[in-house]
Length: 206
Image 1 (spheres, rainbow, N blue to C red):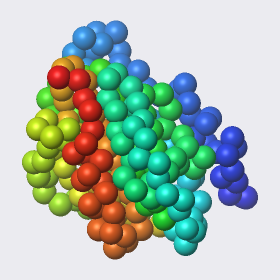
Image 2: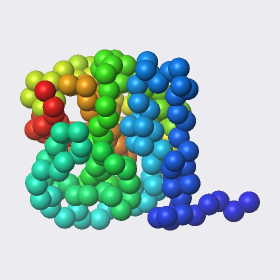
Image 3: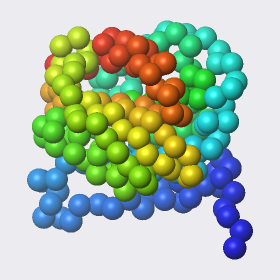
Image 4: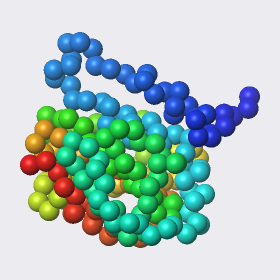
């Protein structure tokens, strides 16, 4: 059987849109929103080969112009980062950026739970998405200067490609903030300072 062609507009990613699992009626008041992690994880399918093919291309300089993610969250791209919307469509209340094959997405959603609960959602979907998934112990960090956050570094295989990544989550004033970064092996470290800078300079609701 011929494998599906992963072309923009012809990927299973788009076929899945609008068909995400929804909480049962009696769960709606107790379960946090699944939309954020589903958007971030679902769109990874089909695009990894294309993304890593870009690794050898020279990236145009980032504008450094602040981008409104949604719900009062603003992120400023570090130098050399530019829109990845053409290879990673993360939907509303989210933005994706790329730099020489490395990808990062920032997403927000209404969330009344804890940092631990939000991180648990992300990790659950990562485990479902990647084979040979491994993660390092979580660590505490901050974003937007002083907002407590949690971070996990992970690695795994998706679409036969090995990937290293980082997920950072934080909650503030009823808003859940998610950063998901991914790159080819040994490449994530080269953009770690950029990721840290974008997290540090974020604006979030207080």
